[in-house]
Image (cartoon, rainbow, N blue to C red; front, top):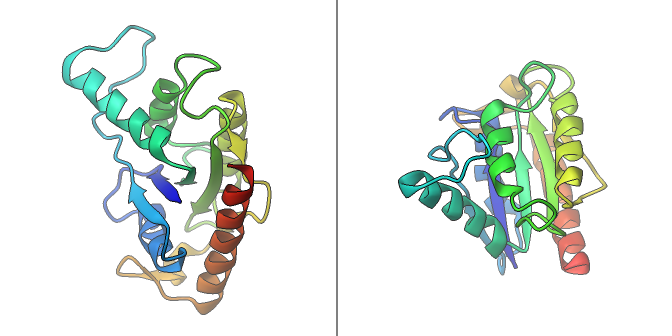
Length: 180
């Protein structure tokens, strides 16, 4: 099984990026895990991209296309998803209704210093993914609040968080195997 991680945060010290780094420790050893980088994807404007911009878009879309399932870890910015993540998804959503996300199993995770763990961003991201005809992992959800007390130096330090992550990933992998 090939799984792809996408961090909604571009910050190097992001809790969501740290969560994706932790994911690899809890995956079945037969799973191939990679994390996509969409930093070079240009702003979406509906016009065809050329040159290095087109290459960055195609690289991101190919990463998604090769994956059997995708895990997106997103922070919450102003009650929604970060603009950079939404932008990358907008490019990946083309051509409409035939995108690389069509029928792709996708899990949504979020980490936040705030109390509700970016739950509003998760809700918005799920609506965006459903609009792209992705298959969104229904249960359990993984929204982690109080990130500052559960991570240190980019590592998960909280036992209950590790246990929740392990369960979420086991359930996600089983679901991807079932729906693919």
